[in-house]
Structure formats: structure tokens, C-alpha cells
Image (cartoon, rainbow, N blue to C red):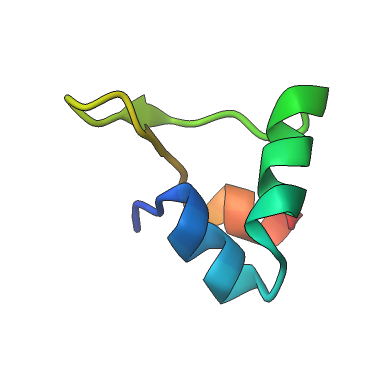
Length: 50
């Protein structure tokens, strides 16, 4: 399983960070884990969803 930050997820999906954040606000994406610093981490399923 790959772990993506918001910026890496956006880059790999070919969308802007704003799109990823919009999906988060709408509940269409959820992080599978968080870093100690509080950053959300996403999996391959999130990449496919975008």
C-alpha cells in the first residue's frame, strides 16, 4: 500500500490540491492515517477515486 499526502495525491491524480481539499470537505475522501504532525495520509483507493 502506498501512502500519499494531499499534495502527492493531487500530483499523481493530475488534479489541484484544491480539488482534493474539496473532496475532503464533502466527505468523498478520508485519510486512512495521520502523521505525528497531523497530516492526512491517503491510500491507493483515494487515488483511484480522484
